[in-house]
Picture (cartoon, rainbow, N blue to C red):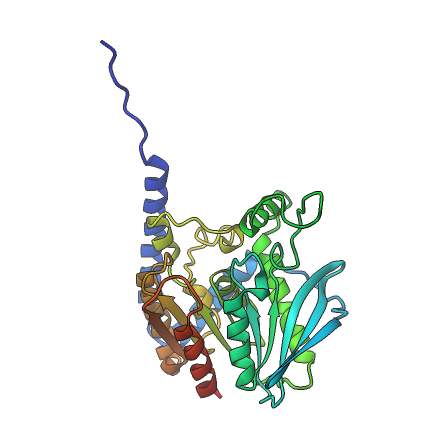
Length: 342
């Protein structure tokens, strides 16, 4: 009679869960030792350096060479169809929303994984809502979305990969072979978008923000840590913890996984802490696959650092009752809290 052999079951997943829990606990203990303003400033500096080390950004800001290819008029604002170059020969398609009565505030709007990028109705709604409040908004297409698909079929009409995340992962794997990181390319697009926004005469540098949902929430969180010039940021449907993601077996696009970041002892919340006391809004959804429990835990970690800096009111969290989306709850909260931050 043949005997059955034991299988390995979930051995690999169990290993990763254990390892991420170890990193999470080690970091929790380090945070527990942060008890003074000086301790907080030292922690901020340490995580900022670690985060920057895994994002190989270009050293030179090459000419943006923006071109407006057309204008759409709407009640209260206009949309300029704009192409700029974040790197040489690397065009970024975008929509620039300019209100009839600008307030001087500007926002870079970063899209999630919508196949049509900036043209997705819920992202257009978010941008229009901000423009109607007087914000100049620059919404960019992520590479492999909207007008920036890279691997087209023989008719050049759609991606041979079927969806943007497949293109992201294809490019990401190629970049890994060269020691580069696809997330750094995405972050650089957003940082150059900020350059373009600050060139606009309607925008003042003392009130410049960034927001986005899902993949856009990812990039908002990452760029928050990397960028000196932002005065506020609001990330929708991304912020939780990598520990929660691993426990929940959540797949993620390759740009959402900074290489070596956990090996350096960092968690998602460190991308917020890295710029404390800059105003930051965590926007979660109760039924999102990005676990709202992790969002709350991240908020509490960051709040402790912000409190030590005397700026506890600058870190906020809002958990809406829906699933993964840049819902009306998030749009209203973004607009309301940006107004208050002025």
